[in-house]
Amino acid sequence: MTKPESKKSSVASINATGKCATAASAAEQVNNGSIEPGCPSQSPQIKGGVMKNTECEVYDDGTNTFFWRAHTVTVLFILTCALVYVTLLEETPQDTAYNTKRGIVASILVFLCFGVTQAKDGPFTRPHPAYWRFWLCVTVVYELFLIFILFQTVHDGRQFMKYIDPKLGVPLPERDYGGNCLMYDPGNTTDPFHNIWDKMDGFVPAHFLGWYIKTLMIRDWWMCMIISVMFEFLEYSLEHQLPNFSECWWDHWIMDVLLCNGLGIYCGMKTLAWLSMKPYQWQGLWNIPTYKGKIKRIAFQFTPYSWVKFEWKPASTVQRWLAVLGIIFMFLLAELNTFYLKFVLWMPPEHYLVLLRLVFFVNVGGVAMREIYDFMDDPKFHKKLGQQAWLVAAITVTEFLIVVKYDPNTIMLPIPFSVMQCWFLGIVLIATWTVWDKGTKTQDTKINTEDRQPACADNVDVLDREHKGLIE
Image (cartoon, rainbow, N blue to C red; front, side):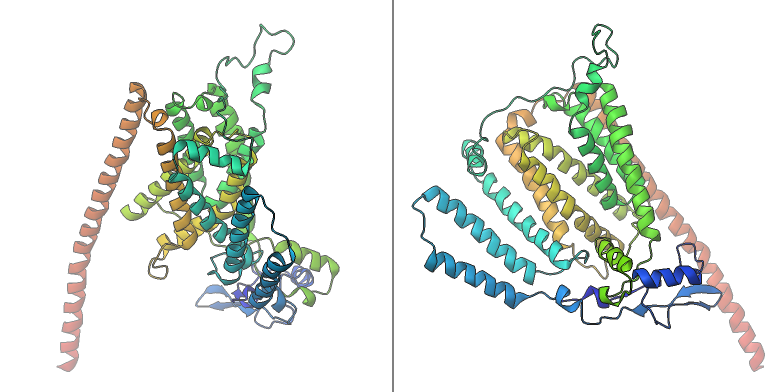
């Protein structure tokens, strides 16, 4: 079991601009737990004209050991006691359906206990590695549930949802957000802005919060804006399949792209800027002398242990360009699955299962994006795709396959010819730019190589002549 408190991190007394912190600020950081007191190496060193930060290992006074320990024996003992109680002391009910549900839930809980204590740690350690191991196990359970639903008939799969909630399993009408698109309706004297207020439902703050969290996952303004705009085009293209996609033009571009999505992306980028400039130097809780510092240290436990800035660089190589396109495609597919799944499984938009799915992706999406970035950025060290990224990709594909199986008629509805023309033109432009950019980079690399070879040969000849002259 790794102990992240004993890891090394960069010095907090050097800020993002490379300037040294003052003595007063350094003393304040010691009091609030940002810097380990008495560490002689927490000072900048200048070597070769470049200011560098030295590292200091965080001291573990023993108070954090219990917090970071896996407690495998304790969990096993508690689990065994619970099973003994159910077996020997509790009378088994005679309700077959109830026992089936309880048995499935107990099996899942046992698997979660195993995974939280024994599963492999991911890239994140805060607030605790067990938290992320828990969501990894939830990911496995969710994928198995999707596989089970995929192998059922359409009728049985929809009726199986009644075991989760008896209110499910009933076809529901889709809400149409289009219709009257007048922002100001003079015909309605009591409330001429009723069209705007009708659109202001619970999904408005959900859009903002969703894009705020997506920005923290992707960590790139351009990619977030591209995904946001592309999804609106998808809604235009697929509104003939789902009435829920039918919206007014100002609902698409003003309320969604500019206000909800745009404001969420802006706030997310501001948070990323703060996280990138925040000093990451950690100290044991009981080593901090002040109560204010202890409270601040507890709050910072829910921030990252260290910070990695994502630099996707999609135009650097063809491989990275195709990988970024694949990431955007999977993001858009996961977004579409949200609407199509509730449509084919007859779940109302406000149902708690829809919300739980979004909460699930919030917790696993950040880990998956970090693993994808590490796999792309350093393939020599990260030789295989991370476990959470692998599972999230499998879940996204499985959800789409459920949609295809449960309602192929909706999926196969013919796309309007004008929409097909727009998508065909976009794909051609992307393919053309990819081929052109690949050819240009290859030619530039060849020219640079040819230019360097004569220079190297001339240098060798000059050195050879100088060497002969010295000998003679």
